[in-house]
Image (cartoon, rainbow, N blue to C red; front, side, top):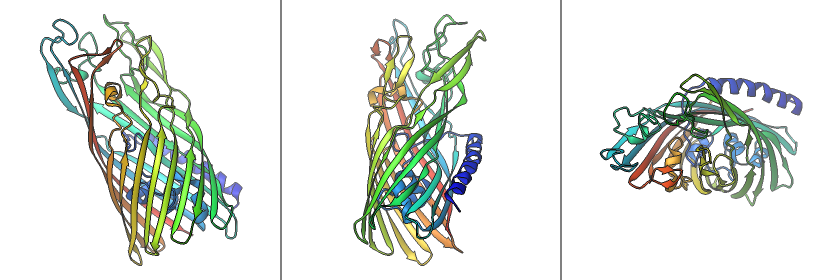
Length: 446
């Protein structure tokens, strides 16, 4: 296979993959901020650690493109991941919090989001010709997302989900669905016997819908009070970024890796939404993928044991859609107001028979959502911090069958309602989230 044919194959598979993903319904929920903590069953089971370990192609392409030189011949991996999130939204409004008699009595309640189980496919391919100092790679990976689906509180049991004014003072039905897929495409090169470098161009594809859409200015047509329109269809946007990485083998037991992932810059999401009179309005919102730096160490104390630890810094504070917060002069909400975070993950893979390997891992993420901004982040409660994972690799007739499970433990944040004039005394909003996930994949070297 020549490099030209390799890239032609990648382009054809990419079109098919994006068509499949666009047809898959459901809400994707992430774990390290709005990033998935791992890529594929092996990397997920290892707590997301692969920057220095380079254990499989999917994890390597997700975190450090320099790793791909370490694979020989052709390596193909593909997988499917099922996400099963649990989310709840609670709120309290004291009597008279919005003015005399509004509301007439204290209101408080909690609503559990509909559990929209999501499925995301992924694949990775590495081609390292025998004797060559270059290796080529591509992958298609679901890397981030969030979503909720809360019913409107028509009986006023949960004030933040009451209808929009004038029939209530909440958001009404609250639904969001965001998913982002990257397609790293590039090569790695052996510089010395111990050092390799890699680079990837990163085309990307994302989808977003938000009901209601507070990032657009409220309208008054057909109502006595302003209200937010809905971005109720999955708007699509294309983006592009880049990755560069370095891998260094210190000896036969220890290796190191470091990589930089640039922002992925996206087009605006765009919608056409009708107000209560039927008049059409054009809505738009921009949200990029943050840049990150990842460093990792791989330790191989024996031929049967592999240990990896990674640390990552994610830059939300310089990323469109996440960096701003609060209300614009036209009462549109400007962004989520997330802070930069560190994540740390590690895992161990142990061969127990000639054909079976077991894995276990742990991942910790700082919470990017300030409690003070819980109100602005009700559509995107990416707040879980502790993740425990496990998995297995079973070799059968030249194929590796990979399976992994992880649990993201419940976390919660609470903050006040916020208006254009600031925090509203006597109010609170609480978001809670946990998650389970199962991944199954196949891999083969040939």
